[in-house]
Amino acid sequence: MAEPRIVWLRRDLRLADQPAFFAAAQAGPVIPVYVLDDDRPGDHRMGGAARWWLHHSLDALGRGLGRHHSRLVLRRGDCVEQLCRLAKETGAAAIHAIRHYEPWWQDAEKELAGRVSLCPHDGNYLAPPGAARTGGGEPYKIFTPFYKALQEHLPPRDPLPEPQLSRPESWPDSDTLEDWGLLPSHPDWARGFRHAWDVGEGAAHARLEEFLQSVADYETDRNLPSVDGSSRLSPHLHFGEISPAQLWHALSGHRGEGAASFRREIGWRDFAQNVICQFPDYPRRNYRQQFDRFPWRDPATDDAARHDLRAWQRGRTGYPIVDAGMRQLWTMGWMHNRVRMIAASFLIKHLLIDWRQGERWFWDTLVDADYGNNGTNWQWVSGTGVDSQMFGRIMAPLGQSEKFDAAGYIREWVPELADLPDGEIHDPEGLCRPRDYPAKLIGHREARERALAAAARIRD
Image (cartoon, rainbow, N blue to C red):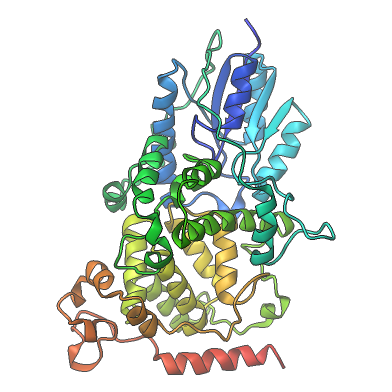
């Protein structure tokens, strides 16, 4: 029998259009391996919501492998040490893996390549990193020209079929998912997750088919929180239960602004990966260094700031659109995209709390928390990034709520306001505000003036 090949899995938990699986299966028996390495990511160790998703995604992949009379080997610890140990135990000729671009995975891939035969493959993005470059050969820092240049490399290659897997002569020892304790228990805060999500490769494709029925309206509906117009594919895409190439080709028969807008969203993932390849600490550090002097209110030393941060996290700011979004996030590990921008802008510009506090909260509470996307989006809102709006562009939550018709969304997630008419629910002031709903932490005009004054201080 041919020597086995290990397939090292991370955010690529699928069988179809999985280049590492496909190549390994052509060479010999396959040993699929997932290593839970909580040390290498440092402060970006996988958050609680993502760990819930990971448990169910690995379970689904394990069942998919079972249909091939294969299995998933689980190990915990340093990924390089565990993989080298497994290669020695099994006599594996090589380790196949899809390339990842978070800095800790980049470092691990370099270390591993120095010790074993590592066969890296592209498969998590539309195009390999560095494919879209300026005329001078430099990587892009602005999305619009990046996306234009990306078109030269599209469409992506055709998706690969699910491979036929052969088994090794013997299987190495494996942990069980229960050993890892990825699911919450005391308390069980994931009840809403179970109601909101089906997880795994099959669920990802079912969600895609459902979304394609309404993709023509995506350009408009994606901005309306009260309408189910989002794809809700982001966690499936993040964990690699479905590939960008599969999404792109599924859209091939769809024309119009809706499909074009969704293609741009897929392209934004490539842009965010391009950013962290240039600036590995991007989710941790201001790109625009003048913001290192910005007078943020610090929850670690300021009791009022600590109170305000906690109110934002709990959905108790007194701004219904913000509170609805933060409660949706806590309940189902996901938030409507338009509301994400409103809630982020509120934390940064109304409360003057450093964007990194928000990035860390989203990292722990989003099932789709992605190192590149999360950091890039927060720096875009804060005005601190490579391609971002100006700090002085301060979103008005009350105006945004009315403009995008969020009344139904607020009634769903802020039930104490459910009986208010549309004319009052966006801004329940005075006698119309229920006793159990908080007053605003700060008025919009006061917050705007305070934010602009703070920004002026770093221009002096």
